[in-house]
Image (cartoon, rainbow, N blue to C red):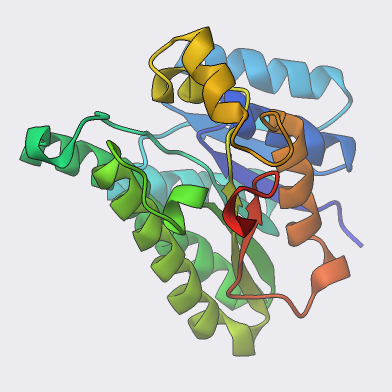
Length: 249
C-alpha cells in the first residue's frame, strides 16, 4: 500500500501541532497549513527531519479560494488525501451574551463553522472520487454543553457537530468517514485565555474535572490518529468527547 497522506489545518500550535507529529510517527506524509508562513515552514522542516515527507501550505480557512488551493496542492504534492483533520479554530471574544457583537460572531463562525464547512466541501470532493477517506473535525465539550460567558464559541462548536453528522451521512455509502473529537480542557494557550490567564482560576476549573487535570495536546492527537485508522472502519458520524469525565457529570 502507498504511504498515506494526512492534511491538517490550524497545525502550527497546540493540538494541531501535536497531531502533525502523531501522524508523522505513524509514517504518514503530512501536509500542514496555517496563516503564518515562517512558523509553517519551520514545522514542515521539523517533520522532514524525522524522516517524513512534509509540506507547509499557507491557507486561511475563512476563504474558499485558500481552501480549494490547499486541497488541490496537497493532491498535486502527494497524489491523494487519506485523512483530513479540520483543526483550525478560535475561541473569539469571551464575554456575557449581553456584551457580544456581530463582529465577534462573524469572526468566530468564520473560522470555526465556515472554515470547517469549506474544508469538508473540498476534502470530500477528493475523497468521494477516491472512494475512501477519513475526516476528523475538531469540536469541543462546548459542542455538547453550554458555557457561561462563551455563548458564541459554544454555538459555533454545536454547529461543527451538526456539520459532522450531516457530512458523515453524505459520505458513508462511498467509504468516506466523518467524525469529530470534542476535547475538554487541554494544556494550551487557549485554556489560559479561557480562565483569564489566572493560575488560581485554572486550578479551580481543573478541580471540577473528574480526572483532576487538563489533557495534553498529544492525548487529543492520539485520539485523532485512532479515529482516522482502519481500526474503527465502521465508525462515522460520531463525536468523541475526550474530556477527563467532564461531560459524564
